[in-house]
Length: 254
Image (tube, rainbow, N blue to C red; front, top):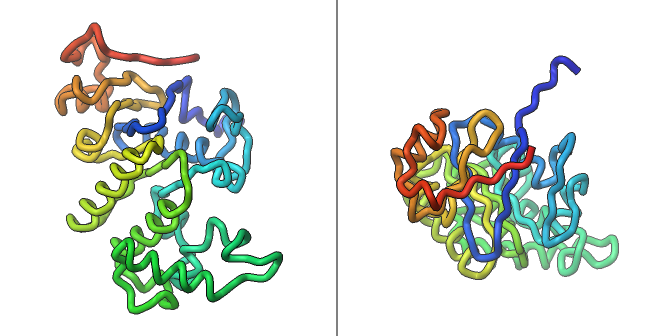
């Protein structure tokens, strides 16, 4: 189809347990599509995605979720929440069909409410109660509902895409703290953000995407804001002048 364009082209990387791999780049360079592929929302034309050794290239989002993947989506209102549902139902969205939220085909409303009340406390969600529609909450509290749902499950991979976009300083600090906690618990974290400060602050390694390709993967201790900024603008690693060129890691499979 002449209308279709390749948005992710020859990208190869791994995310290890207990590390945050930050994907830096100006919005619109393939990051959205990359996250959709990893989380099962978009099927790649070619290539392979493995989660804990299992091929999930064409797996459903539910299968990927059940393998231990959590997803904080780029658009919290469109992809992360059902705005007309209460906070409690949104918290149960990923596992509503499993115990303790379900017994056979019967939904256990009391269990859902009990869990929601606990997570509202644990994640400091400002809401009059668990039965309030999530669409009535502020952006920061909507994001905390997603974080509470995704982080309270036993997860092995956390995919966080633009996790603090449009939030106030307090909510940003809170979500950063929770992401780092997950890494410290041994979770692998794929953090995608167009905020360079966020990437620099949280990442152990930084992959820079430009026009659908990863142009470099840089250990955080070698990354400077200027160098990463130049890579994001399309300057080649050689021209950008890596701080320690000999140790730069570039991975690509075409």
